[in-house]
Length: 240
Image (cartoon, rainbow, N blue to C red; front, side):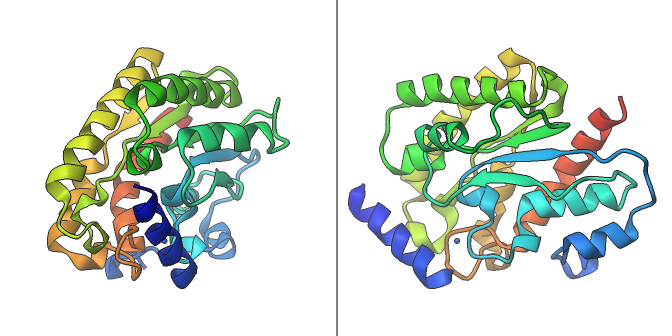
């Protein structure tokens, strides 16, 4: 598994991992112009790994920024998202990074969480993931001021269908499903919102435009498919 991790790091170094066109080209400036004036702004915290930071795509095409743009276009005055995420992070890494982020005690209007692919990738135990995912989810709820309806967990995408996986989808896919069974069970028990984007991620097996140029991470077009499901879910909760 360490050898595979080294390959991933190498790929990361080499790569830097409009709606009708399939990719939402969003920037903070563009989306603010399209937003109807609102009195109060809403803060957004995105927690995760490479899938949150948007490895191998421009920041504007990452899912937190596409989500922000979609909400702004629907009259929600969303601030530029605060992102705590780095390629290669496991759940343990994310917990440590949050502790060192300097935002302890700060509250956000809503929080997204997507973490776990590197736990599987690095061969970490599912028992450890169960403990640590519960911990980071509780932290996310705290950042949302205890409001579970303002926390949104996304399932782990299946990178087994990407060229990087080298045809090992039969091995990787079932393991991803096992990790997702853990995060889904914990999320539903906690009462937060849960979005399964794993099935969407698997459509990349038949559409390479859904994969970034590094052959591993999602393209902006793939992230847009996630946002088509996530943005209405977030908007519905923000209306309450």
